[in-house]
Amino acid sequence: MSYAPFIKEIGRGPKGSKPLSVQQAESLFGDMMDGRVPDLELGAIILSMRIKAESTDELLGFQQALDARCARLAVPAGPRLVVLPTYNGARRQPNLMPLVALLLARQGVPVLIQGRHDFETRVSPFELLAALDITPAASIAEAEARLAGEHLACLPLGLLAPGLEPLLALRVRLGVRNSAHTLAKLLDPAPGHSVRVVSVTHPEYLERMHAHLVAQGGVALLLRGTEGEAFANPRRRPRLEAFANGKAWDAFPAEEGGAPPLETLPDQPEVEANAALIRAMLAGSLPTPQPILDQVAALAELARTPR
Image (cartoon, rainbow, N blue to C red; front, side, top):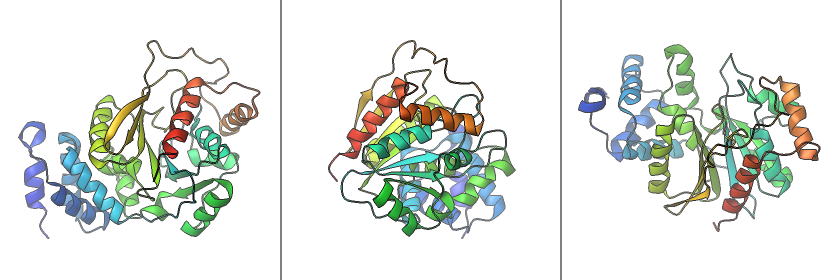
C-alpha cells in the first residue's frame, strides 16, 4: 500500500495540510498499529501529525482503530470500570495516582491502572505501585479476577494494546511524542462499561480532548494532569470536566489562585517516601488534598452512571 496520498494531505504544514476523514484515519492508524507502515513513511506521518495536530475526525478514526485492536475486560456487576492511565511518573512532586485508585477501590469502584514507562529521568509509576503491593497482572484473566475480588488491577500496555507500544517507544528514538501518546490516554478496554480518566499536559489538548469526548459520547473525566500523571494537582485546583452521552459539564471548576501548598509534600520523593505518604493519607494520619478528594468524588459519581 502507498502512504504517499496520506502524507500529501497531512504533510503540508499547519496551514496547507488537510485533515483525513474518519475512515482514512482509521485505516492509517490501524496500519501503524499493525506494523505495516515502512519506517520512512511512518516517520513522515508522525512528524506531519505532530506539526498539524490531530483533527476531531482524525482522533475519532484513530480511536476506532485502537478500539478494534484493544483487549476487552469483563467488568463486575455494579459501578463502571475507572481506567487510570500512567505513562509519565514523578519528577518534582509525589505521584498520587495510586491514591486515587486506592480511594476508589475502597468505595467498591473497580479501577484498572494501565500504562508503560520509559522515562529514565522520572520515578517509575510501576516501582511506586509495587511499593504499595500493586503489581501488574500477568494476563487479562488475572486482571479480571483482581477486579472482581479486590476492585483494583494493573495491566501493562503490552497486554492491552500490543500494537500501540512500539509507536510509544519511538519517542526515545525520535525525541518527540506522537499521536499514539494521545491515544494511550484514550484506551478503553470496556467500552460502554467504563469511565476513562483523560489527563493532558498542554492546555491546547484540553480543547482537543473536549471535542473528541463530546463527539465520541463515552463516559470520561478530563483534567490537566500533574506532570503527565492522571491525578488532580494538590497544589492547584484544576478544572475537572465530566462527559457522558455527548454532553460535558464541570464536575469541579478550577479555583482562582489554586489550593494552598501542602508542607507535607516533598518536592522530589523517592519511591518509599512517596508510598509512605500515600499510606499515611489512606490511614488518615495525613490529610488527603482536597483536589484529590474532588477527583475521587467526581469519578465515583460517573462510575455510577447507568450502563
